[in-house]
Length: 296
Image (cartoon, rainbow, N blue to C red; front, top):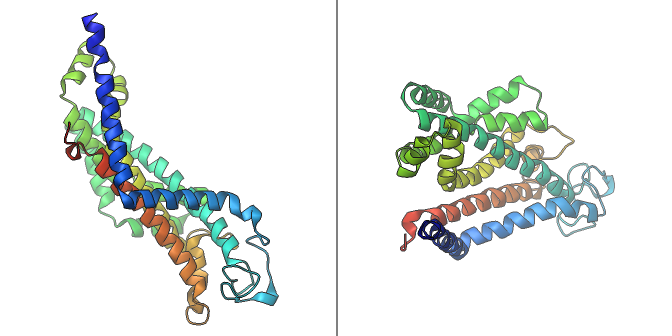
């Protein structure tokens, strides 16, 4: 009975830690604003295009360059008379998809490399970390542009390219966490009963390093959205007539004085999306940091 009781005691303590972390996150006003903004963006981009009277490719030459709230197009129209609101929402599907999928790919790559580097250390760890350092030597935006210029700028390819330039920070975070946990008593105990290296790495160690990974992944979504916008703005990303927030900015450059809403609206949406994910990342960092917990 004492052994069973001893095994049961960590569960309430873990639940209390999670509850305190959730309360800290809920008290973070900017993080809650970020969550609300992200939910509204995702739901709006997913559901609203079907409810609009115009789709993103409908050309209305009678209302070219219509200003916001000055005609049938709620947020105005572009040089071809296409509805700006419809294009913003459809572009949001592209940009948010790139952000989330690139984050998943880069997180998986970074976690795998970081776990192997931190667990084995020595020559293997040094070689993997030198690989990380070598990739970090190249400015990410130039590496991204070089890769984008060499391949066809399709949505899957652009997402993969962004992911391949964003995994290094995750790898470093995971490497540091695994190295710190490698010598803990629970790892030594599981190793002593003959557990395999893969079990030690991905069942015992990785779950204990999940907090900084979640924070890094959240910030990587914002980075991926910004990188997609930047590459598309330069003409190497998503190609017209498919809309993305970046190529909408590209198309608006020559109309900055005559039709400023063409640039201001996608710029504002990019700013909102990137800031919201950064706010959520900051809130998760503060909530999951054990040093913020006075009862640890």
